[in-house]
Image (tube, rainbow, N blue to C red; front, side, top):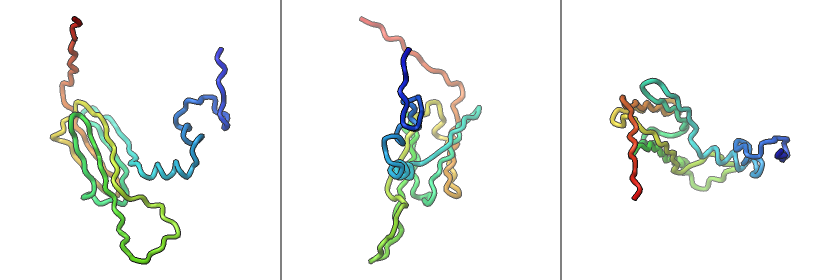
Length: 142
């Protein structure tokens, strides 16, 4: 029988990726990486997918949503609005820059995607294409 090694927190599953980075990287670094990402919830309904994406502190003009080849991409350009000269920060945690997330979502009607941005939440409604049929092509071997 295989004897599993335990990590320093007593977790017997060394391949638990939820805790993988926290075991080997400092909490501050993990926290800073999380701040850069867009967090979201994805729900599936009978006729659509609903994305609720948290993007606080951004104007809707700074959000770009595109679909190409069944890949949905959300890009955000968050700019620093403090332009005071001779300003010294004691602590600065807010992140600025351009970041994006992409999702492969086949069988959506990209011409009828709806987007609404309200109070830092971007809600996307992606209608499904009716009669989703996967085509399978058999390749002959010579």
